[in-house]
Image (cartoon, rainbow, N blue to C red; front, top):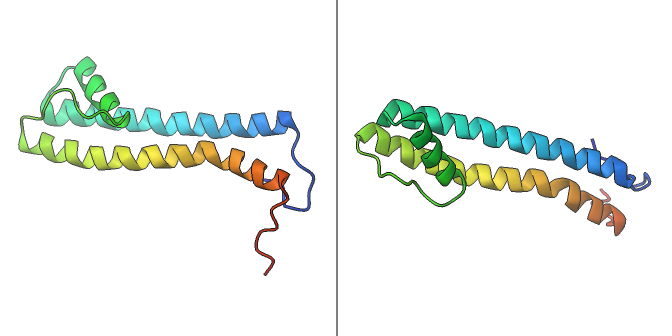
Length: 115
């Protein structure tokens, strides 16, 4: 996917296309995670779609739920979803940072592992 260390640095257009692919995949992961959260809140808490969206989006954004869960299933779901949302934040940050970090290392001619 990326150019090897002995290849020339990717052009700006190639880099922007690569970053756009990573961004698109990251947004797909976020959209899927938001859908999972909405379905979970709808199923376990019986929330309206708009309230389920708000709670799931707030957890994915790191703010925490707006409405405290009332059922045991809802509390378990909210706890697991909060842990999952934290991991998704890290994954998407890594997805967006990978092409930038690679370009920086390639530009600086980082020798990497020579073994």
